[in-house]
Image (cartoon, rainbow, N blue to C red; front, side):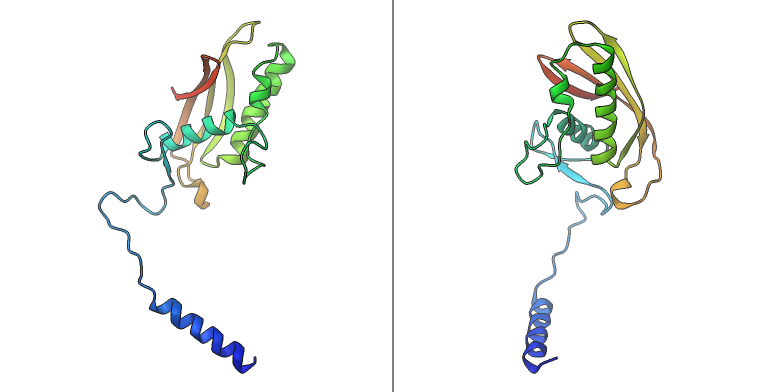
Length: 163
């Protein structure tokens, strides 16, 4: 190692040590294991199961290449919403919902996706049942229990709610 490289690395480590450490206040702060997000409707901080519901809704309503820096995030579900409700489309819809949740939302593992109502015009309501793992994004796949989501349409929009 040259003297110049050793000198620059010691300066760098000294600068890093001189920085003030940031401490999280205990008031209102959750544990480090929780994943926080922002509620789309009111801008408040959101975590836990509510954050999972919102994440799934965003994933299912986002087309591929719609996000600028995350082109790979999205689903084929928005393209399927306008198609005729035949058996092939229903199977592709079920597969798309399951694949998107498995790929992008580690905190929910879907176990069953079943239709509540289906009509020929394409209006439908679905139930997604699965295993909720609140710390799965950290590698801890301990289940917290089974949950169910209701997936439906309102005014041409896809709506995800807890059932």
